[in-house]
Structures are given as structure tokens and as C-alpha cells.
Length: 411
Image 1 (cartoon, rainbow, N blue to C red):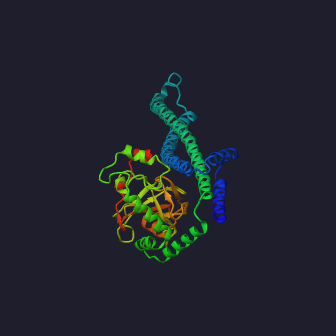
Image 2 (image 1 turned 90 degrees about the vertical axis):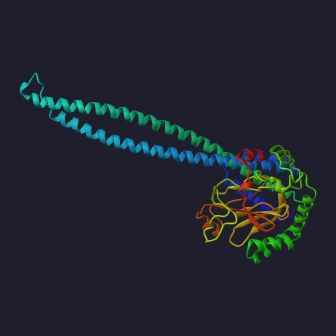
């Protein structure tokens, strides 16, 4: 293996370790756990996919908790505002009582001639005292509600910390696994580096995604090998392409983590692809792209440093920088279909590599990487651009994603 590639993997692992608050004992335990898988690429891949699924679920829960906490904070502020208003009104009532106290009306039995003043005072007191009692009751209710909200916030904060710890630990696990995978790469590193440089050179000359796909498919050796592998898998399908697959059949096919070709023909995967990341769709296929044109893909706003996984089995057609799209990954998923993922801050796959559905392929940045994506999505937050193409033509990916239940199972 190229020493530089190994050094890059170790450097990235050290960076992850420095940003994650996990005990040395736990780090050593993770390293030992993964060291026990040495040489077993299938087991490493299965661990990567399982870890990626745990990250996905933790990201979903962290987002949900953050939303719930925002709602609780808003409710807390509303109650505090109500209490401030009640305090002001009670202050007014107490002031009236103080005035009466400083100049109290004489009692009827002492000075019967002041009956009128005494009557007025009695009326005033009979009016103020019930109001004070009602205000006190209202304040008790609001204070109870405020206490309940504070307890809920504390519980949510505890759950948030637990999920953030899961995220940190799983990110470390993924980094260690990727380090182990890179150290076990069997391909000639010099040839791989040369092919990667050639692919990036071709990409720098392509002025559109159409051109990029065309030159990559025609001119890069490793990509040609990947495309040939894809064609061979298409020629010997594991399923009848005319039959719609049941979810059980999909799960059975995906269970084989030692596979070197897609678990099923891509055309049969409609409704079963894993969404590449968690987030909110801000522009759908066919909508205005923000530049006066029509979007040929989907824009997803994600969490900072969100994980990105392969939506389907496929070969890495290209990975690396491209124009102003940030880092991109293009997968050849067979049957003349390609999936493009753009706007990443970092990729962790290699040219020509076969990746499994749900396997991590990269991470997002802390903000959007691509100015094009930022402008069209109208948001400076990290934004992933997803494009599905058949024979070079963009198509609507919305029907291809798995339901929540299937996504969980596929993970």
C-alpha cells in the first residue's frame, strides 16, 4: 500500500480522535474490536454499514430533540412573559392595598359618622382580594407548568448528550474502519494514484456533468473496468428483471456483505434505495433551481458534518473535486444508471471501488461547500445535491427512495 495513503488515513483518524470526547479506554476498545476483523473485508464492510445506520438514526434523533427543545424553550419564554404580566398586575393591586394601609378608613363602631368611607373601603377590598386570590391561583398553575417544562428540557438534554455520544463514537468507529480498509487495499497504489490524477484532469476539462460522465466512461481505465464489471452483472442478473421484488427478497440479497456486484438489478430497486443523508429537501427535481432554470436533481440541507452513504450498490465512477460543486461522488449502479452526490466536504472511497448500499462514501462540511448549491438552495448550511441519471439523462429520483420502515431495514 502507498505509505502516503496510509499516512493520510492515520492523520484523518487522529483529527477525528482530537475532536471527539471519548475515553482512551473506549478508543483502545474500538481499535481492538476492528483489529480483530483484520483481513476480513466482508466483516469490515458489514461493520461500516451497521455503524453508518447507527449514525443515521442518531442524527435523526438529535434533530428531533433539537426541534423539541426549541418548542419547549419557546413555551418557557411564553410562560415567563405571562408571569411577568401577572407580576405587574399584582403589583398594581398591592399598591392599592398599601395606600389603604397608610390611610385606613375608621371602623364603623369607632366612628359611625364615617360610614361612607368605610363602605367604599369594604367595596374596594372585596374587589381586590378575590383578584389577588385568582392571580395567585393562575401563578401557581403557570409555575407548575414552568417547572414541568424545565424537567422536560433536562430530560431532552440528557437524551441529546447520549445521542451526541453515539454520533461521536460511531464517527470514530467509521474512521478506524476506513483506516483499516485503506491499509488492506490490494490494488497497486501508484496505478491508483495515476488513475485518480487522470480522472481529476479530465474532470477539470469537462464543463458540464454530461461531459464529465461521458469522458469518464470512455477514457479512465479503472472506470472502464468498473463499467465492464457493471455490464457483466447486468448480463447475469440474480433476479428476473421483469419481476417486482418483495422487501423480503431485497433484504435477503442485501444480507450478503461479501458480494462484489449489485444485490439486485437497479431497475428493480425503485422504492428501496437508501437516502444518502438525513436532512430537509429544499429543491425537488423539476422545480426552479434558483437560476431561472429547472432543477435536474434534489437539494438536501443537512446537519453540519453529516454522513453521506451510498444509496445503492455500485462502482465509484469518480470521486474528488469538480468545478464549483465541492467534492463529488459518481456511482455506476448498473443498467446504464448513475447516481451523483455533490457538495461533500470529504470523500472516503476510491476510484473503481465497489461500494454497498448504506456504506459511507463521505461527509458534509460545516457549511455549504459549493457556491452553486448554496445559491440555488438559498441556504448557507451544508447542502447535498443528488442526481439520478439513466443513459446520461437526469430523472426524478423521488420514487426510488425507501420508506422509513424499509430504510431502517436496509440499514
